[in-house]
Length: 214
Length: 392
Image: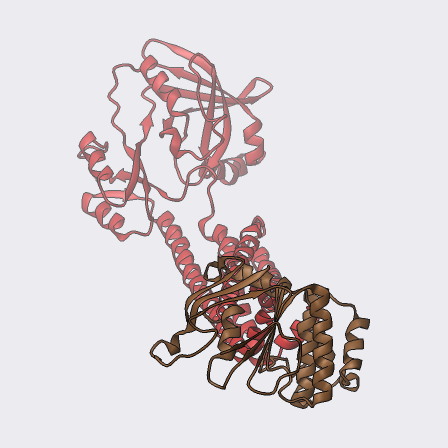
């Protein structure tokens, strides 16, 4: 998958708003593979909605979203399953980790599905993100900042053409945010993928190809 | 798979599953036991004759004390019986209109002879091997069916008082008989053989084709109105039969009607019990479905997240589907086990009471159990799949 295009897309809840000033909603926006985007937003402007529309689990939008020119409203459940395994990866703002499983299990439950990374590689990332002592700790018992790092690793253990990260560093200090950004960019570059980072203020300094105001 | 199971087994209620398990087990057991018991006990009640089916009744006219009136059925009377709502079909008895005598002997030495007569009913009323029960014109062989009571009269009355050997059905069937047919102007010698016995008809039966041929040959002018009718009824316990027979002044073999009634009630009772069993099975199915729905509801977030990180609905449904199939299979196996055990107990009792009883096959019960298992499992699997897919 090489392109994601939003044509006059906007959330249905915004339909009655006339003061919509956005560089994404109701515009023609093109995300390309291999490029790095920053979507800056104030809270309540539909940042997480954007992720959920593109990731296919909410359809309450107007306009058209296409992958390589194909309207995603025509995709079926099995297409979405395949896309989520091979083409799209999303790190949710709310993380969506399983609190009953340990940090390592949370990553493995994804990696066993894709078989993408070996255990050594995963352990290396835990090490680099400074949470290797939490491998066998239940995620429910970890701090949100630690959970964010686990969620990032889980987002990386699959092949993807586009990686969406929704406020990835909101609870991280600058040093750890930097480390996480490096790991993310290293993997994205290796895969030649496009990366879309969203932020409501704090964001990691990266060499963005384009910044959009939501 | 193990990690997914680790997630999804949370909130599984052992109590609910145990409730389903027991309810389903009882339901399945009752259904299978009712079916098997019905099949095992039915021969005791109905005492299959082997020659004449139990749904047939024999109708004759009452002979008045003075012998007034006709004892034969006219065309009109036969049509009237045919038009009754309880009647499936009617066949007329045809009697031989000529003289018959018969002698029996072993190795061609005749040592026992008697005058007799023949009767026939349409061949479709005779439940016997069709390859034996027919007559080919020109052949000198005729198959015969005797009433069991004749054999009893010989064995317990005649043979006893004259110190003659007692004969079993098997021995009789091996004896060659010489049958002499004598009309007004002709006579013919034929070979006869007893091919079966019946308790239902007090007459000596030969194939209908044989009587038609022999009557036309030896008594071409004789009038041939039947004195007895064989009636196939839809339900031998129908009280309209008894009413009609009484109203017309006919007679029927009452005790066979009683046996039919007993069989009918056995059938009805087994049907009711089976229906109750099926109802319990259906209710247990709903318990399981509710339990699974509750489980899915409680684990909605986990299921959603699994689907969102790329698990297919099929893969996420699988643990619950396996759970239900394993439980259904266990229910089937345990139900069959208990069925075998219970059956061995009552069959021992039945065999003590009726040593000659033949063992009935258990395949219908097995098949029904497997069908129930399959139907319930398929419905479970589909419902779970739908419920899980709707999570997102």
